[in-house]
Length: 190
Image (cartoon, one colour):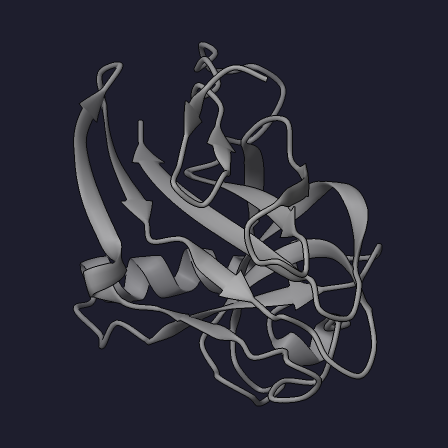
């Protein structure tokens, strides 16, 4: 796989080429890449081969419009891991999806994505882009977890938080005891 190798060992592939609209799919501002990390905390066992696009949920669309246009408070956002093959755009809260593990259990915690985590990458191929700091889930304890998606939500532990967006992993991944899953997000405006 070609791309930039980070100190963590994750390889960042080139950003996907933008297609002229309409191209049959909805535009996706957020991309993510995931990597399964061995017990030693350094060896990459598996990673997505390309940037995975998001599915922006209705609640995420509404939240962005409320914050930007109505100047409502920007909610704190958390990354979560899901094991759910039936995710729909209309799923509005974490209660509508299946999380890989219960928050704050077995080495799993939702990870805050703060304003300070975002780096302004400037213009990239004519579009502005921000990249988030790498987030790590684990190492997991007591039991493995199956992961199909990443999710961005507005709550640290509850199921009442908004489900803003989800990003599928390129393959269903099992994170074994003592392993971790690392995630990097990017956001582009086009």
